[in-house]
Image (tube, rainbow, N blue to C red):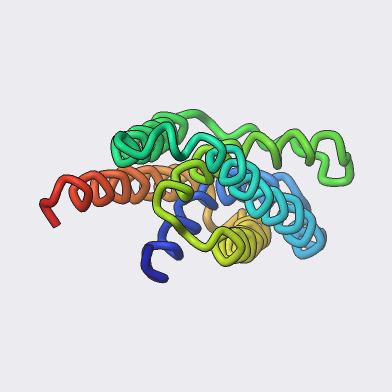
Length: 186
């Protein structure tokens, strides 16, 4: 996977965290958005870095059984996640987050990073350097979540929805690219 594709993957994975961070930013008073952005960024960036590692190591145990079908699996997982993101973008933002509540932040961090777990399985198939990928995914998610929270009132509901749709389209595109490469079209 090229560095550009890795960055695009990381940005796509961060779109759920961005959407939740925007909602958090909308709910916070303006003087608390920087602190909120740091909290959202830390939780979401941390979990977005950990989940692909878990998926990668779980998937590496099954790699020898799926080698003949790995491109179809990667295509299916990435397309499913992408379609799910597009469908989720239509749901309204519920802006009732208490960023001081660790239990709620843990729940949000896990919920926004489940897709990164599935992508971690796909990264096994692509023989990606998982440490590099986890760092890129985690750092970009931190930055995007921070910006989403601190700029939440400016981005609003419109930006949240469009970012999730764009992220979903990129993931579907990556899945199609992987399939096309393995089938010899690229």
